[in-house]
Length: 422
Image (cartoon, rainbow, N blue to C red; front, side, top):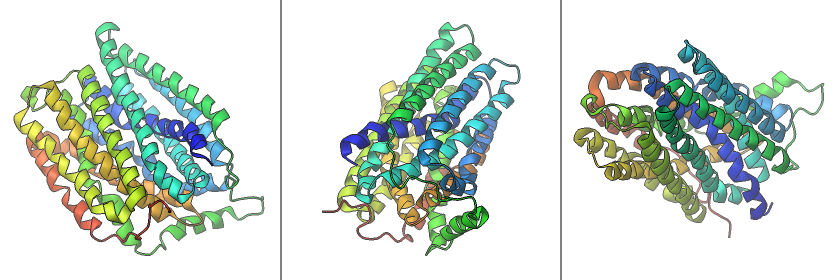
């Protein structure tokens, strides 16, 4: 497949993958914070929304076994669009917190299944060197979805908070806009996605033993060489970031007397949702380019340092509480650029680990452990911050980078993996 044809669907596919994830994991946090939910409850309950991504390996083989990845992508995008509309309808209700959490969980389940199909489709349709070359592109448009979600749409919500008459109405309108955008994306993919020859169900006839196929697919992952180190890398590489990400927007929104920076919803949409995500995007794009030239092994340690050291920016922000809007934006941008650059190594590591006959299901298993690595630390992060305050919390986050360095020293990377063939 030519690069021109790849550009027609890879950007929109990963934009579509990013929207529901950023809604569930980031926009929900901002919305709940603005509507008076505590940091402890926000971190605990929104971390539980990672669960569909954690357990998706349990049903990932069925995505392989039944129907095509193309079918799953289009169908699930329609379901996610409907779920976004469901959130919009339920926000104004008296028990909005419990009801929206339930709808978010259903959206997360559909999104996690969509991720299985989309990532499998990506690996089926591209050669290995194309996968490495476009990993930055997919990461870029995933981040553009984040800009649209926690940047432009959060800014819209902040504007509507001042003009719509109520917080509930402001956020309800915002989610209606999201629903319309996502349903349009589903229609586009119905007509634009290609039909790779290898995109076909692994169960080709009714007599096939489904349970045996499932067991074989799932079990073969855990028979991989050095599986213990692989799992440790997937769980610990982002141990610090998993805690940081849950408290960044509450930190930016909380008043200064409570240790935060006292920004408005619109300002958070600019600082974290736009400037920060642009920096994240540039870091991810650069990471894909350099790995395609020199390979993952060469860049691994540089990327490990890049994802961890810039966390120190939040130590400074919490200790000094600067008022300069541009300085705050620059500090967030530095941390996010390092995260985007360093996360590229993690993505390629998952692709490397998934190589083989059942690459779609195995990649889903990797992302399940990735989600677990974000879910567990995130669950206690809000409680910990409430106990020790932002200043000590960000010091703890910096100490939490140590496991990431240790496990990076233990993984084995083939010399040429990710490098574009001459």
